[in-house]
Image 1 (cartoon, rainbow, N blue to C red):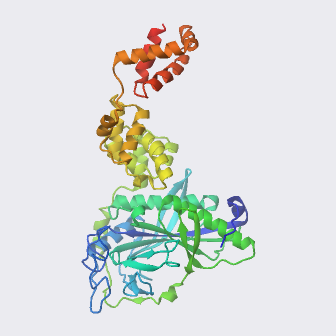
Image 2 (image 1 turned 30 degrees about the vertical axis):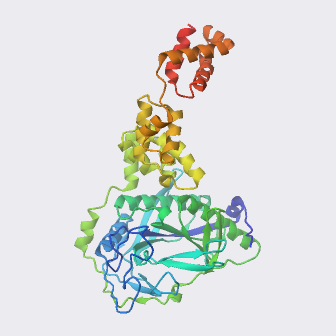
Length: 497
């Protein structure tokens, strides 16, 4: 079914958006939430399971203390209150990826609640209220074989890998974000980006969206402009990139408006995001909390973190990422716009690591926000998942600084890095990219350029040195870019003096 979309401008003229974000973070504990099974990513299917995470009769769960510790630290970093007493509940539903036919989660008594995070978009600060952060276990992973969509409908058969079932999760739920207007998509993206940055700084997860260790569910509704009410919401599940978070919010705003303008009603449902087409499709009718028949988990005692333990964990929190950015912006000499662009591209941590590896701040920013961002966009991946490390970028810049290559040749080195051809130094040697330092070869190339461009040469003899750029270009073309442009310029001016 083809959805009717309203232009984004027309949506804003008639409606106010409200959105809520649910972000699931897989914790990097060595064992699962309620058993001792390992949590290694990418292991052979169904090799990291036991009677407890498979829900076999008689198996008893035990809470992972490290997961509770990580949950408390996340709550503190989000300015949340930490519960003096909380407990787990059974969330009952039937689906193949949940072998127990219930998920052990938290319902009305979460570990952390009433927090906030301030995010910046275009120089303006927005406060996102955090309703709760609660602990739960992840589900297994289904693989649907056959069919055109890779989903269960139309598939020939399905396989389930239970390695992921039982991995510790923290779900961070915002209150409805209202009043964002045209900035709603950007605020959603900025919030998830900043939250991911915070999670990484805490060291509780690698927060890799490409591997599913952080996933966002986007809830959105529209209401008639100026009413201040909440409309019927849809929930787009498992959005797995920052770019997709922004696009999903924008698309759902346009889709909702199309239905409402036509006199229709929004169905409260879950929807699937399709990265390749940039649209959502219907999943299933959205359940309310009572449909899950929550009740306290009888096999687990309540969690009651002492105030002494909470304060001890507060002392382990790293520097707040927002404060850290302000400090490093001053150290690096970036303008406000340069820093906003760096953060917006998801490159702040990458730039920081590249500088730590020896590159200058401007060089690090240049490579990540131009060359790497372009390649990531062309490949449809997050910039951090491109396959080039900060240390490699710093090594390439060191070759530029040392005069071995120039910026143009550096781009060919990055080609080699992405192709897995070795270290930057090995790629330069194998591809023959080093700048030619032979004065005789450079002089001959300059002579050729002068002979081929007599009119330009005459202008330079007449004192119009700006015309030297044309001859430099001719020399660089003959030398396949492997010449020092500064030295070429010197030779041209010497010969035409």
